[in-house]
Image (cartoon, rainbow, N blue to C red; front, side, top):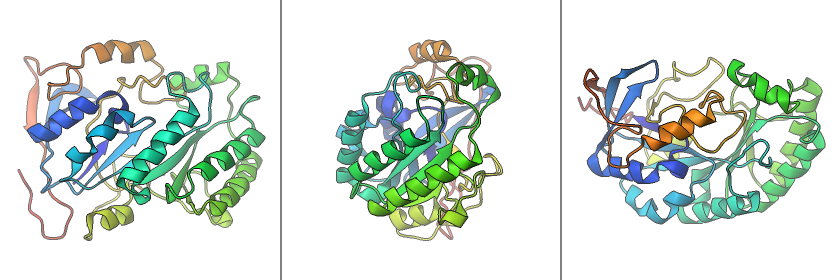
Length: 311
């Protein structure tokens, strides 16, 4: 099975000690997002975990402890955007994050650090020219430290529309997307970085920018050293190409403070409050098992051909 850590929160940035504790214990408890009293016990046994995919904007807290991942196959989806604190409120400066990206790449290999330029949004400050110039600078800085860049475009989820509107962030026009895509493709080519879109929502194949997948079977097979047999993830949007995975994160717990974030639903104060409930020794990311909670073992199997179910 593939573990996603996590689309719902930034585990490397804020929950690294907890994550390593869970690896040591060999399992994690994950509440159902729609029914928190229904909890899955997810095995982290290396025999059934084919790959761990980390999603992060700042993996610095994990860097000193990467040796503890020696029994696992893994890679990072590292979001590296050029926005200021009006958009991404609590991140280190861009130059610092580029340095962290390079350090991570040097430690684990450039093929295992995927650069996400995501989400692309525009307003008066962050216009097309800004993005073309910023993308070129970052691509040049990352040359030799990544093989792939994933492009993502802003989604105007209902619960973040007012925050985006207050910053003058509207829907992207097709001509804006095309102009940026042409420029990005040339910058990526100059830096020897393959360029993909995150979903099929924006079709740029006519510009030789294919629709990729963030949980990528080809990359997992390359890292794992064997063929995996996995289906498209039915729990993701139809426009998503990702393979099936188990996400071990919890919504409304990320403290990066990004105004476009769907995972905290515009409730940064709630995320702060939830962070206070976090204890690194607990099998749950937030809080503890309570009376009335129902824990069931999640059926786990390796996606390697011929592997058996663990439970």
